[in-house]
Image (cartoon, rainbow, N blue to C red; front, side, top):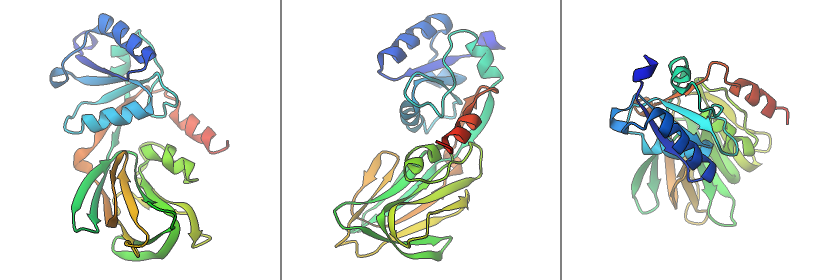
Length: 255
């Protein structure tokens, strides 16, 4: 089967990624994405995120090879045996978060987040945010720089910097993490079922404006944000069976 596998490539603009792209294209060809069986991404986690957003309307499985700085979502880079690695790879379905935002002017906008949806204060004033889970109020007033909801894939990104817990890929859960919270003092977030609906209501939005960002798409002056998992827009990520992500995630929690 490996000799007939149609591989398409995507590479970041980093010189090392571009050099690897040329080597791999010479060895395996470069199928058009509409005709490919798999998309191989060369770079780091940031470029992987960008590529997944670009291919949200395609059902191509994605196999990443690490040529960037971090690479939680990537496999090791190697020229040889690529088709065989892809054929025996483990599959992970990654469902993004669907963000629906209502702004102060009444405008409604939607966005998809593979990593996280983050609400952040726009001025020096702390944000005041009410949090509801499946329609039930859980935090009456969070006073903080902001709050985020992250997928398992995104739990190693901004969520980790905000001291949120890391979730292994494949975990049917999302992470709710406050960003520099002042009140409630003892609340440090929650791990929630993936099928949950989370709603953020911005209190005093005119005096304490807040923006909402789905990965890198920002909406400003928001009044409310509803978030749920969008299984219809899921991505299939491929990993080598010996991929060390679980070990790396374990190590990160003791640094």
